[in-house]
Length: 569
Image (tube, rainbow, N blue to C red; front, side, top):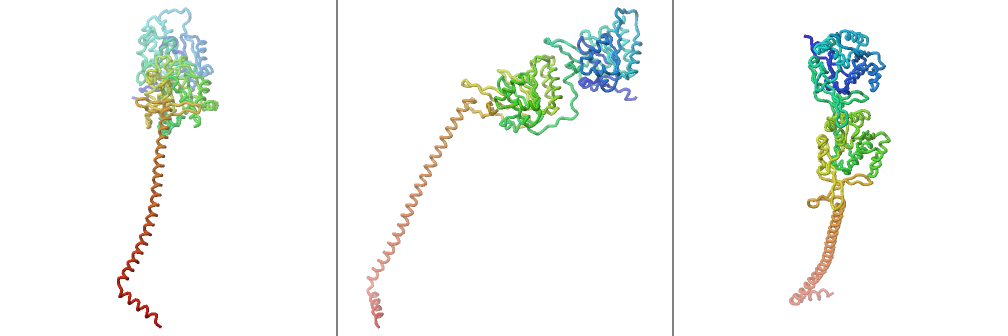
């Protein structure tokens, strides 16, 4: 058996997210059913597939059973890819709407319509055919069994000629088939279900691959956005072909002492979460990081859900952080967003497009916990998980701030699951004592690097941001004035200790000097005593000699005779 004929062939739709979740596109040479509620995006999906096909150099045919050709073209003008259709001769728009007042009179054969479509395909060399609103045509078939048979004939016709067809129809309740066409979902190889429902006064669209024979696919309900780019599946962009490398390079946070506590900074391409209560300087630390990146000549995308650019930049100057210059030079791109203005998925898509446009080395989102305020059936957790995965794959060094509650400084970060996903986590808090409020900083984790587990006082001044050692006093941690007082007391104690040491040293030196003087005096006295002893010994010897001579008269006489003789001439 020829594998080329039996193996499922797929044709790209040109919608990146859809091609990703289907593993390469929809069944080639077969019909795919697309059903959904009103405003769920069925017609747009068909038009966008044709526009992308024409963009690749292929052709297409669009058969409308519900809207007029003029209305279809007006729909096309709403999207940026409209020129691929409106200015191209590689597609044809066929008006197959039943005439007004038409009534069913027996069975009808769809072969005539297929012949018209075949002729259009021959002219445009189309690879895609869209039957938009097939249920509007088949509702005139009095026998639903025959209507389903007509769909089967359409599918077989496509397989014989290699047409790739999209059949769109309206959903009825939870059914996977249009009204009076129940059962056609079993005939076709693939079925896409689009939905549109209101959640807290906002329209939420989604797409689900209900069926795809012979192919692996994502079966979850996928958040879908429809904007001027058409249909988007924001969380399912095609990942880069190359795997991100684990860099050993350290990136500065902009605070020298904090870098030392983090063993040199955070790894390039990693993520840092800064969580804390309001006013604990989360945004200030994020601004310091952006300024440090600018000094390195790196681009930073700064997205703020809380601040406007002007007031934020002005406020940072009060603590020695200057972002005005980097913003003017283009090294920092500042974007202010409103959490309530869009759904979570729309925020994620906007962030992804900003990343595509700016191509930053660093990203700051301040605060990422603001996504918890945005509406969406998928929730903020999914958005933050996909966001961190996205920046990791692109090797972007990321700083995320997150607001935490008064009773639980780690609560909201944990709710958004950012704390479990971030590579490093810093918690900022208040230390209130004796009527004074001081900021503290502690490092909860920093994957892959040694880091300090000690709490530090965060000091903000007009000269910059710094960290100070805190003092433990019993079971308390002293900061601010208490720390300064304790430091002064310790300094005074040290000065007293040094003075005492100096005094003791001077006393010892004085005693040594006195002992040395006494030694010299005794040495002189010893020398004098030695002299006296020598003289005394000499005199005693003379005395003894004289005494001895007086006691020996014979020897004295001999000496006298010798003397007399010596005098004779």
